[in-house]
Image (tube, rainbow, N blue to C red; front, side, top):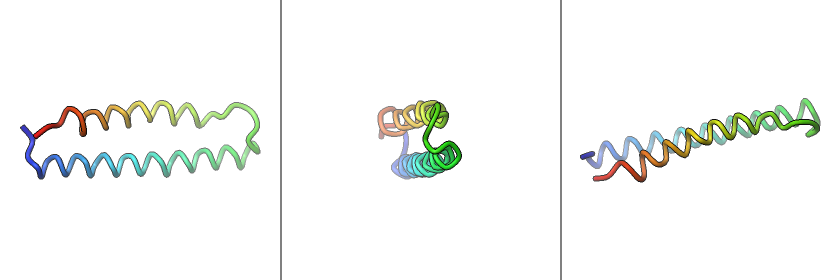
Length: 68
């Protein structure tokens, strides 16, 4: 059984992870757009999708499975 302090720490960790995910994905899409002009295969989608699975798993652990 997790304490309130542990739950708050885990939630903060999730939010930091999610913010980094957003910033990095914006950066790689901007890089792809700058280099290719938006043409061709959007290769950043592979990173977004793969890392997104990790984000979803992190969310489930922190907000669904971690209970008081």
